[in-house]
Length: 497
Ligand SMILES: [Ca+2]
Ligand SMILES: [Ca+2]
Ligand SMILES: [Ca+2]
Ligand SMILES: [Ca+2]
Image 1 (tube, rainbow, N blue to C red):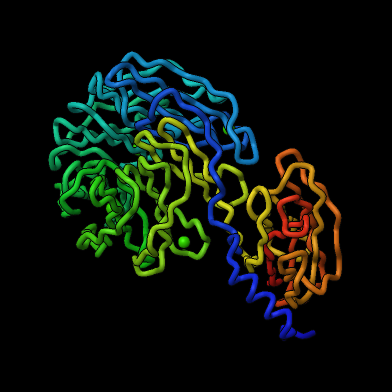
Image 2 (cartoon, helix red, strand yellow):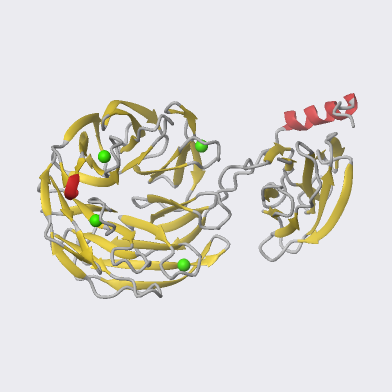
């Protein structure tokens, strides 16, 4: 088995790369699929509200300062959304959280109702339908809400950031979706975002608040669901409402990211946790576009480092990959059709284990994660674009004996003939104007793509294959835009564990 490239093939490969007509590797996110909203959504959440195994999208939309509408859009499988149900509120609400506050296992809806200075709770009947709102008074102009078991009694509790009163209200759950009277804690002015997280590592949830200008507050959780005095940490002189909390640096201490919604110099700011609930100095990462509006965290590329996604009002979502130690790679912009104050939320919409992004505002755009480098699978590039761009092959499964897995093809013409080449070694060779890396092939499988330009090749991985064995997969697909009527997917390498 040789891994040496013949010199002529190498020359052709270099020529093909120098031509640079098309991307060789799979982009981290696919082109967006969008669902029209009537108006921008100030807050969104993802969760399986009807219990069918598909992630659903819940949004609250508000026309100027009029009554808000809650919109539930149900997941319809394979990363798509279908039917919508709406609920008209009799007040405006800007903050929304999904969580099981009644203890029946179904996620309920909690809203920060700025129009009535209250928290609204709408219980899920289990079918994904939400009942009439119950209301609890909080501070002046509640703007954001977070859920968590703040006193450790097993019941979900509520924290609300009150913009006008500069306070955070805490409502402890008493069971069945009821809450005690709000306790109020003073913070800096204009708190617009709130997250519950254990910042000081004592096992109790603490509260982290984002203020409109220049400050992040941390309130340490104390026994009984009470909170100590807020400590303020400077985040920089720019406005913004959004924050995300997670261990970006990998040292076990949660870090904070906030948006810098500065139209002349938009960015995202990271403040690393330094221990005891304290945050270090802000580091601003520049973004293109306008109005960095919201930030969320997940490990998009499955390298063990948390990454950031930032929604802005320039039809993009910026993704900054974590490099370890809290460092971030420069932002990469992915197209979105959401523009009107987009919120980004993260969930596995397609159910493939890869975290996807929904950017909501004007349109709800779904950006499906198609990270090809996951588990035993590695993208080798070598894609050759056709009418839809490069056909994309992704692998799933662990390659453990008798475990299920699949290689899936997408981003091709509908009803196209496709050939899957499988090889035990790779000797890249010229093929129809591109490069076949899964060569010499040991098996070829003929498939046809469906109406959506997709095909799947599921398998049960055989027993008896030794560890550290190499496998290569690549599709050739009939496509009139290919140099010789054929396009090539990226090539995937898989190594058995
Ligand atoms: Ca669902
Ligand atoms: Ca509780
Ligand atoms: Ca704590
Ligand atoms: Ca990562």
